Length: 169
Image (cartoon, rainbow, N blue to C red; front, side, top):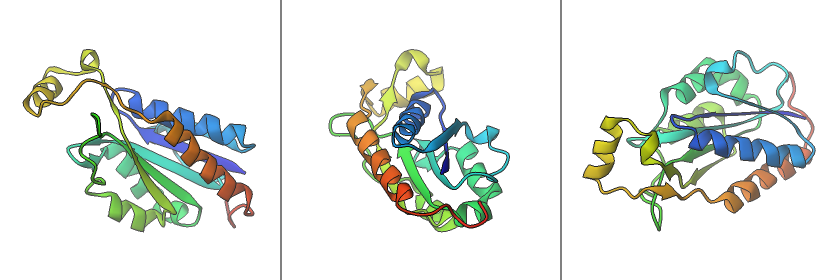
């Protein structure tokens, strides 16, 4: 079974989560391709997809939303899981789902969505982002829950290994 893993990432932290998901799925015996959203030109040949995005101002990034829009019909015909990355701190805040995730779940017929804590490295940020972080007193640090990410991916692998490939994939 061949799985596409794709995540929009402004500074690389969410892309690292996508790679960890891809590695975990590969360890479970699945064939995995990890690509940024703009590099996904077709879903032909993929039996399933795991899509994600960093969250900015409560929303998925445009490149991830555009991937969903471009391939809505193909995604709806395959098993799809979604993840978001962005909350920071101990405990991670904000802990609400992205504003637009309900529509993305409906469009893709996703089997699930997970919200993972993110990472802030102020050295990677532009001036505007630094000003916003200072204004909201956001803490710097890496809050990504790697064990949770891998456990979630193992659950996806178990579900995919238990079913035949999607028709027409």
